[in-house]
Amino acid sequence: MTRPVQASPEQLETLGYPSGLAPDWKSRLVQELDKAVRGNRALGLFLDACTHCGACADKCPFFLGTGDFGNMPVARQDLMRRIYRRHFTLAGQLAPKLVGAADMDEGLLDQWFSYFHQCSQCRRCAVFCPQGIDTAEVTMAARAIMARIGLGQAYTAQVLSNVHRTGNGLGMGRAALIDTLACLEEDMAEQWGAPIRLPVDQMGAEVLLVTSSADLYGEPHVASLMGYAKVFHAAGISWTLSSAGSEAGNFGLFLGDDGHMRTLAGRIVQAARDLGVKQVVFGECGHAWRVAQSLLPELGIRPRHMLELTLEVLERGALRLDPDANAGVTATFHDSCNMARGGSLGNTPDGVFAIPRRLLAASVPKLVEMPAGATRGQTFCCGGGGGLLTDELMDIRKAGARPRLEALAQATQEHAITHMVAICAICKSQFGSVLPKGVVVAGVHELLGNALVL
Amino acid sequence: MVAAALLILAAGLVWRVFRWLRRPDPSRIVLTPAPATRFGVALRVAAEILVFRSLYRADRPCWGLSMLLHGGLGLILIWHLGHFLFQAILPLALVQTGGAAVLAGALGLGLRRVAAARMRAVSVPSDYLHLLLLAALAGAGLGGLGHGGLAALLFALFPFSKLLHGPAAFMAGTRGRRGP
Image 1 (cartoon, rainbow over the protein chains, first blue to last red):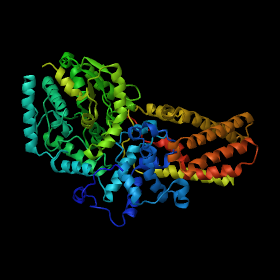
Image 2: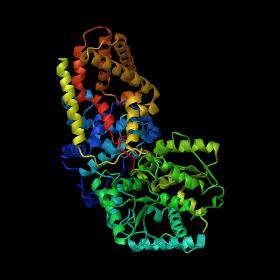
Image 3: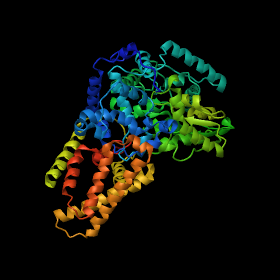
Image 4: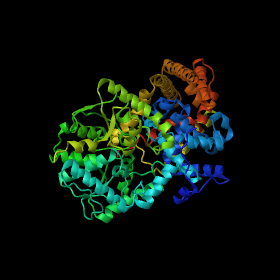
C-alpha cells in the first residue's frame, strides 16, 4: 500500500503531538474524532449526509489515475464514516453491520494513513456531490486526528517545523536568504540590464510580498519572483520581503490543524506590522492564497494577490508588454485547485480564471485552452498538492496527474503547446516531474516578466 | 402508530438540525467560484434542491432516476398533506403517478447499485434496504394495501439515517456561503 514516510518521534514532539501511538490509541482516536466533529459543523454534516450515490467516484484524479476503489472520494470518507457511525450513531451502535459501521483496528489505521495521503485535497469531488460534501475536509480532519494520536507524515511535519523555526518551509536562515536574493539580483541585472532589487526587511515599504519559499530558489519558480520584482520596479512601487515571514505556504491547512495554521499566518501578520507596510501581497502560491483570504481578514489584514496588483498596474498604463519577447511560446493555463475552488481574484466570481488568462494573453503570442471539464471550476489537480509532493509518493503523484496530462495531450493534438502555465508553487514543482517532453511549466510572472519592456 | 412515528420524525429532525447548528463553524469551505450576494447563494442552493444541479453534471442516469424518485415523493407528499390536513379532494391520479415514479426510481437506483462494481464496493446493506422500503411503500400504496406500518417505519428511521441528506443539502457550507 502506498504510504508516506512517517514522521519521527522528535518531529512530532516539536509540533506538540504525541511522539507515537499509545497503547490505548484506539480509544484516543475515537475521542479525537468526537472532538473534531463537535468542533467543526461541516465535518459532522458531511459524515451524516452521504447517500453513497457514487456521483463523486469518477471525478477524483487519484481514482481516475489508479483505478483503486479506495480512492473513490466516498470510499475515502467511509474510512472515517465507519468509525463515526460505530460510536456516534444509533444504528452504528445497535446494528453496525447493517450500516457499514466498524471498530478501529491496525488494518484500518493503515488504510487511513495510506488513503488520506492519496488525496491532494483538491475538492473536485465537492463540485459534483449533490450534498456538497467536501472530501478534503475529511482528509484534513483525518490527518489531524492521526497526528494527535502520534501518527504523522514526515514531509509535512518537517516543513511545518522549518517555518516555525526560520520563517520559511525550506529552513533557510536570514543570511542564506540574503545571499540567495543577492545572486538573483545579479541575474536580473545581467538578463535585463536594469538594477532591479529584491529588498529584504525594508522598513516602511508600501508592500510586503509574501510568496512560496520555492520562489526563492526553485526552477522555474525564481523566474516568477524576478517577474514580481520587475513589475514593482516598472510601477515604482516600494516593496520588501520579510526574513521572518518568508513563507506564504501554510501546511497547517493540509494537516487540518487550525492551531498551526493560525500560528503560521500570524507570522505574516507580525512581519507586516513590524515593517510598517501598507499592503500584504501574495505571490504565485495556491493554497497560500486560500488561507490568506479565509484567515487574514480576521487577523486584521486584507491580502492582495500579485496578479491583482499587476493587472491594476497594467490597466493604468504603467506596464508595456511585448509578447514577441516570448516568441515561439504557445501557452495553456492550468487552473490550480486551491485557486479555482478555494479562492477568488478581482471583483467577479470568475476573476480567478479570467485574470491570469488576461495577463498571459498580453504576454505571450498564443494562448489556448485545454478541454472544458478539465479546467476552471472542474480543473484537474496537478497530482502533487495537499502535502503529497515527496519522492516516496511519486507513483501516486504520477497517477493523480494522469487526467490533467490527458487533457493536455488532447489540447496538444490541436495546438503545439510549449508551455503549461500555473500560479501555484506546488503545481510548478509537480509538473516539472510529470510533464511530457516538449512542454515546460512556467509561471505567469515569469512570462510576463520576459515581456515587460523597461 | 403513524402519529407516533411522525412525532419521532418531527422531534428527531429538530434535534439533528439543532445539533448541527449548535456546533461551531470554523471551516471556510465555500466552493468557488461562489456568488458574491446572498441572493446568488440562495439561487445556488435552490438549484441543488429543486433540480439537483450538481448531480446533473455528475451522473446523468443517476440524476434521472433520482428526479423520478424525489419528484414522485413530492407528489405523494402533496396529495397526502392535502388529504389529511385540508380534507382536499385531490385527484387520485396525482398520488398514483407519484407512487409509480417512486417505485420506478427506487427499483432503478437499486439496479444501478448492484450493476456496477464500484457501486457494490461502497454500498452497505442499509443502502439497499432504504430503496426496498421506499419501493415497498410505493408498491403497497399503489396496490391499495395498508401501508401505515411501512410509512411509520420510514418516518421513525428518518432522523437516524442518511435520509438526513435532505436537510444537510441546505446547510452545507460549500454551497451555502458567499465567496471570499
